[in-house]
Image 1 (cartoon, one colour):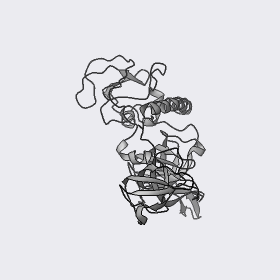
Image 2 (cartoon, rainbow, N blue to C red; image 1 turned 60 degrees about the horizontal axis):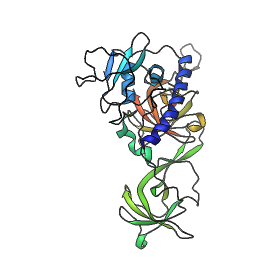
Image 3 (cartoon, helix red, strand yellow; image 1 turned 90 degrees about the horizontal axis):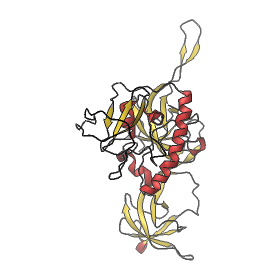
Image 4 (cartoon, rainbow, N blue to C red; image 1 turned 45 degrees about the vertical axis):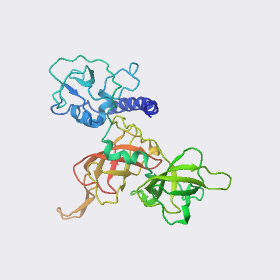
Length: 356
């Protein structure tokens, strides 16, 4: 799993570096956070986002200041607990120093550190954002953009002609391919539309269960699957999709290379307003170049007001109010899901989403 992810992160590192160059050419000098320390010892449970915020006022500009030689380290953005991040105030860059004892606060001891490449493979690297907030969304069915076609993998029956199935039961399904032995069972959830244009983007997928193939399909016979775990009861007509493998989300926060203009299309869980660590969907995806790790700004549209103070009615547009930042962690063709990392007010469907 880690090897597969390493190949992915290597390719993304190049894209992140290109994004940093693009952003650096169009943005001001990187500004350090108030009270940024000279050194910081990485602790278990830290995230790339949190460490970026320790040193930078704009956490998405991490790739611009992270100074590790990609020729010496295959995955330069992987950071491990116990490593020391060193700030060079002359160049406003960050690099890796030698491990020293800590006081338990994340601040290194007084020993002067000289930047150097340091790797550690004994423990797992830290994640980009809190994994506990997004772990189920990384592998479970989340969104369906395809039409409800009869050719889709579908539950057609349950053992002993029962009405519902749960963990330990057997189910029968048609149209299963040989690409996977493990399958997620889901059913169509609520419709998701583009708040700007009104186009249908797809449907949220409600995760139901996970099942393992016990007897593969042959000829006109359906496949038999054993239900490994279930969140809801399975019924005939539920759909299936190959179960994905959980991988570490360790892509550094970075700004998109292209201009993004979209809106909040859905708030996961059906609540009216979202806040910090809520999962939301936006009306943009691979079609505009979004990728995991991208950071987007969320703004509330304050509309307009009718001003009559000068004796003549005048419509005055009000400025938008930035209400938060989100980190994209899963991308589909026209929809992307992200975690709200900072929020100064409620986030609602229809709020604007753009480059930070």
